[in-house]
Image (cartoon, rainbow, N blue to C red; front, top):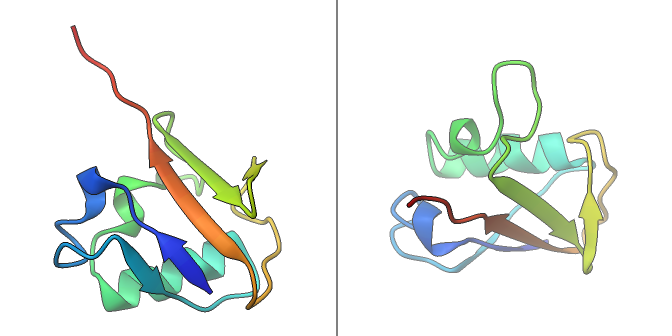
Length: 86
């Protein structure tokens, strides 16, 4: 499946804005990404396997609430990082 990587995480993907990944769930897809790009999953998922507050994941334009959300190989995944600061 095609995964769109937000600019704050592109340092993990050598600058790539789009990468290919596999997995039957969001969690499996993130594991696959982490094997290709070590450390990227921890930037999105905390120690309790929950999405970090500043991360949103969309599958085919629908937001997912949990890493258990199912995926198909034809899905398109967009990872969005919220901006914060003062």
